Image (cartoon, rainbow, N blue to C red):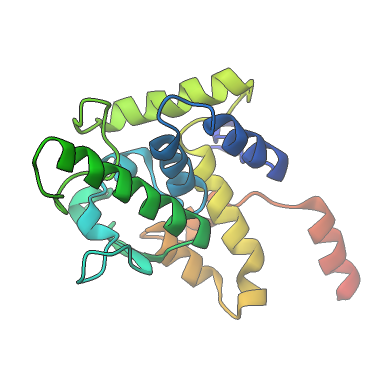
Length: 204
């Protein structure tokens, strides 16, 4: 995929504007979780649509410290991976889980950990295509040209890559978080920074 065809990454201002916008949506808790799964955990549209509560909870059924994404929910046979949960995302997931449990209780049903984290208003699973269209509508409403369901993923991967040295990691860690089989694929996702390049050259 050529650089020109890649989804645009989101700026800090765009991320903040999106989060603010989603607080006013009809399904604000769910919608915030969808966005954070994309921009904080780098999940693909298919992975968000396929994520179940079992993949984000600990043995006691509480929101855990990581997403245990299974291969069946990802791309290819080896797309499954473990992604530590971002603090904001963990809080949002806990709120969404409480809401979902209350809705089930109203109907006389116990909470089902095998259920999807993200569902329609009727409680039905969303398809990967529906999820991609959700992002398209979101960014279209905000006037973010060139953004798609992959924008949050590219944003997360680029940020991880920029912070690897500060965290004591490497691009290999980013590759594993992204679920890429090839390091070259990860490198294509990362957007370069002209100012950073200048600093690197000056430091040599």
